[in-house]
Image (tube, rainbow, N blue to C red; front, side, top):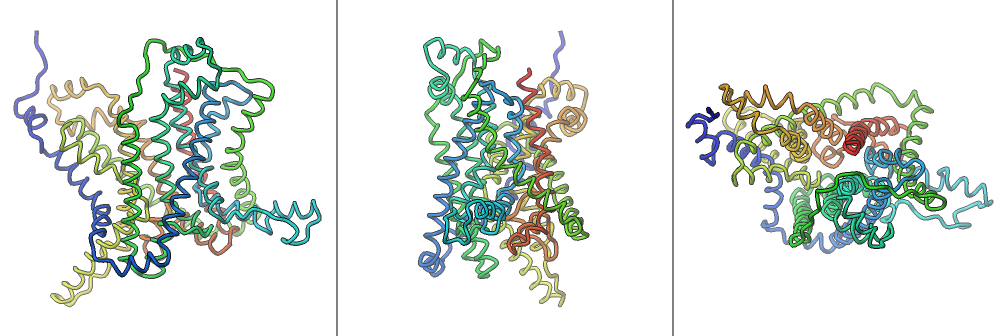
Amino acid sequence: MSTFSFPVKERLSLKALPFNGWTLGVGAIALLIACPVLFVLSNLFTDSSEIWSHLAATVLKDYVVNSLWLMFGVGIGVLVLGTSTAWLVTVCRFWGSGWFEWLLLLPLAAPAYLLAYVYTDILDYFGPVQRFLRNLFGWTSIQDYWFPSVRSLPGAIAMLVIVLYPYVYLLARVAFLEQCTCTLEASRTLGCNPWQSFFKVALPLARPSLTAGLALALMETLNDLGTVEYFGVPTFTTGIYRTWLGMRERNAAAQLAAVLLLFILTLIVLERVSRRQARYYQGTGDSKPLQPYTLKGWRASLAIIVCSIPVLLGFVIPSGFLLDMTLTHLNRSFTSSFWQLARHSFILASITAFLGVVIALIMAYGQRLQNNWAMGTAVRIASMGYAVPGSVIAVGVLIPMGNFDNTVDQWMRSTFNISTGLLLSGTITALIFAYLVRFLAVSFHTVESSLGKIKPSLDEASRSLGQTPTKTLIKIHAPLMGGGLLTAVMLIFVDVMKELPATLVIRPFNFDTLAIRVYQYASDERLTEAAAPALAIILVGLLPVLFLSYRIARSRAW
């Protein structure tokens, strides 16, 4: 009997040597991606007593307090809303429950800053809501009644909760779908009602997924700029932006970015420590679907209301408002400026998505070939960017690139009397690099998951036929990973279209995107001009939402 075996030389290069070409390549990627983060962290060790004394005496306290309150409020909100809606549509049956399974994902398509602009226009003194109340009750001025201000810290929390709860909802629903039915049925036979089964069995088993969703939501909260800036809530992100562009203090901005990065690292460490001693195991014997609870009467009505409110507030009302404003002022919506902005956004998103998928494919395949400590460390470093806010990445990208440009320009002037100008900083190259640092993790995890479904026997068969690892990747794996690669492209494309903080700081002069123009128009209270670009961002954001809902529904059918 004959068996397949690799040549001795190839076996050594792939298995025995810890540093081969793939490991070095992924290591180089990891080092490049980590440079902005390492630069920001290095500012913690610089002499900045004057900067910190000024910040501590003026705005630092507000940055810390508001950021903490924002994280606390958003964390509670997304956990309650995401977990409750996921449980209702997964294990309960009521009118419209099948539709709500994917409708509840729709708010994920709209960035929080778009909702901030829309609801400010709707709820302000001259907005339709307060005008209706004044006409209804005969009020004539603001002294006649009290109305909560949307431009406040609670308003910012509400906007972020409405947009970010799908992170928890998505992971919680998948966790509930994958839970062993015999465990939940055992709780029923022991006399637990639906609420007791939820709190005592389903919720503890879903804790890892809930924690992961909460961490993603809090990271996005700290990354937000448009909402808190528009509502006048000073946070670390707004402080970095104001210090960089308003005060022209790069060192102070770098110091604030370093503190914000410590916030993120602390959040990650706490999440890991909180479940370090915990273990979550489930049986695998019974895979039949759980018999759902049928809700009737007031219970069904309450479930419909609970599931309808986030969909209406997070997608239907803002999208309808923007669509109506766009169609009403059609001559001011789709101008030549709009199409130029759309082209800029499309170019940036397309290039970043292509490069992100290629790099992620190299990383994932390198890890498949060389699953050792060196490769694992490099992959973890390269995929940590999603935890870093865009404003921090912007500081970590622009300052080193600016120093490099100045050094090269001075040397060229002194040597050849030639000015090179800006080679890297303030260019599309710098912006795309920042996008890759921020969103490479999204692409990598998607590609890694898709590649992991391919059996190793295909690698062995391809190598036995004389194919190199690179040819095996191109000819065998890439075609089989079509769906995963498309998903990765789609996710990065949409994330780049919506990204505001990094784009606002790094973009070249006179190179605006749809997100930048929406921010500028809304800041000038020109929501009519901002409606069409905002609506375009939401429509693009629908692509991954609909795709995710289709994949989840398909997995449940199986």
